[in-house]
Image (tube, rainbow, N blue to C red; front, side, top):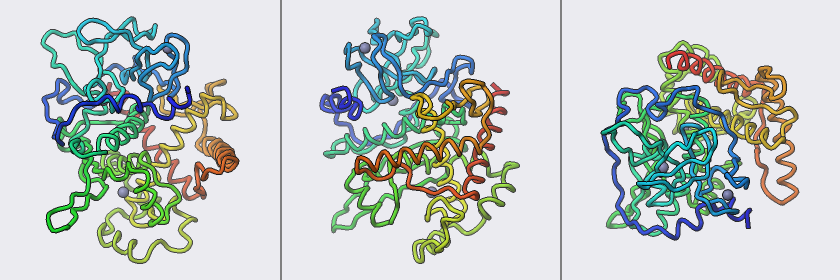
Length: 418
Ligand SMILES: [Zn+2]
Ligand SMILES: [Zn+2]
Ligand SMILES: [Zn+2]
C-alpha cells in the first residue's frame, strides 16, 4: 500500500481535476524583478540541504513527490525556500501552516498547479507585506512559458509527468545554488520551459516539435512523457537509457553553458576538454545523424550523441554530473554509500558526514562506481535493465570534474554577492 503511493504519488489527485484550460502563456509582473536569484529571494542561511526522503509530523516517512501522508492523511507540500517536504495544517484564507518545528509555524499557500491542477506539490511562502503581489505559481511552475493543451485527452497526465521531472531538476539547481532567472524578468539571461506537442494539420501534415534549447527557452515534446512512445524513440536511436529527467538535465546543461562558460574565463579549459564550440552546429549535427559516432567514441565520450558537437558533449556530461550528485545524496541518506557523502551547502563541496573532510572528485567518482556496480547488480536480480549503463573513462571523469569546478566556483562567487 505504501509502496503504491510512493510510486504513483499523483494517482489519486489526477482523477480529481476538473479544469479544462487551453494552452496558455504565463505572463505576470513579478515582485522580484531585477533580482538575480529570481526564484530564490531568501537569505542563504535559511536554506538547508535536505534529502529527498522526509518525515510527516506523525513520524511516517514521506517522499519528494508525495501529496498526502499515507499514515495520518495530512496533506504534504514541498517548501522550496528550505528544500523540505513538510506536512501541513490548514490555516485561515486558504493558507497552510508547515508543521516542521524549525519553521515556527510559517504560513504557505499552495501553488495554483497544486491546488487546482494536481500536477505540483510545491508551496509558496505567504508574503506578509501589505500590498504584496500574490504569486499564484511556485518556483518551479513560474518558469513555464507554455503548457500543453489540456482540452486534449491524455495531455493532463503527460503534463503531470513533465512537471514531476522538472521539480526534480529544480531541486538540484536550488541545492547547487545555481543561478535561475525567470525569462519574464530577465529576457537576456532568463530561463523558461515550453511543453509542446506535434500537431497534425489539415491534409495530414504533421508539425513536429523538436525537444531542444534556444536562448534560455527549453522546449520539450510532451510525447516524451508517454512511456511507450519514448521507449520506441530510445530503441530507434540505439540509446541505453532515455528518461524525462535526463532530458531536463541535458537541456539545462545548455542553459548553464550560456551562463557559466560562454564569455567567461572557463572557456579556454572548456575547449581543451570538450573541443571548439565555434564548430558550425547544424552541419555538425547533420553529419552525426548521417554517419553516427566514431567506433571508439566510448574512450572519450559518455554517449554517442556527445560526439555530435562540443555543446552536446557538455550537456550530456552536465546531465550525468547531476545524476551522480543527486543519486549519491539520496544513497548517502539511506546509508548506501560506504562513508556518507553529502553536498555541503556552504561550499557546494561533497563532504564526508563523519569527519567533515572535503572529498576529492576521485573519491566521489569511486563512491559512484561502487554504488552503480551494486545498483546494476541489484537490478539484474529483478530482471530490470541496468540503472546506470555507462562506462566512465578517465577523459570523461575529467570533464565531470571540470563541471564540478565550474559549479563550485560560481557558487562561492554568488554566495559572496548575497
Ligand atoms: Zn502523517
Ligand atoms: Zn507549482
Ligand atoms: Zn542538446
